[in-house]
Image (cartoon, rainbow, N blue to C red; front, side):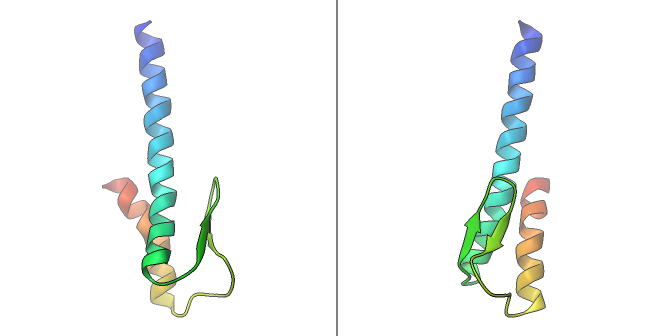
Length: 69
């Protein structure tokens, strides 16, 4: 029973980390003024391109930074 509880905890924490990671990408894009959509495994712009390389890099790095924190 102890192992099952540990396994369920690991699955839950992994899922939450993944969800927060993707949410960070979407939130960064929204904060920069873009229309973004969040899918199960990615976040993308609704249409068009980023206005600058900074915006693209900021959005791309938001997920890993939050995950590492």
